[in-house]
Image 1 (cartoon, rainbow, N blue to C red):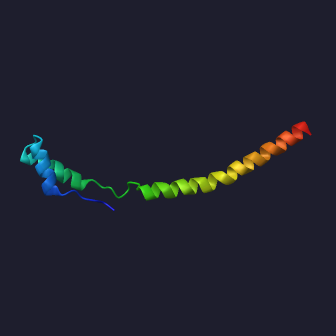
Image 2: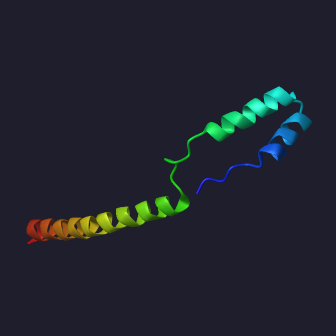
Image 3: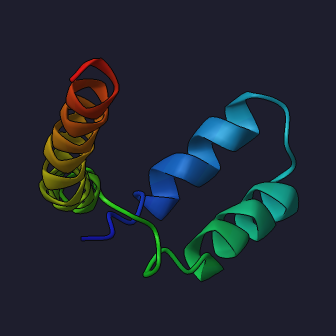
Length: 76
């Protein structure tokens, strides 16, 4: 979900901080042009973390099993 700023308030804040009205409006227009459709959300990152863990845990178990077999072979 993309949350657009209150443009009137943003122009007001920028002009209060020393920007001219034209500069403030140009900055506000530029902000509205930003494409945030490909930005990952917290939910996207959490889903990715879960997918990575589902992939890594079996590999770690397999690695431990192989390591155990190698140690058993060397000691055995």
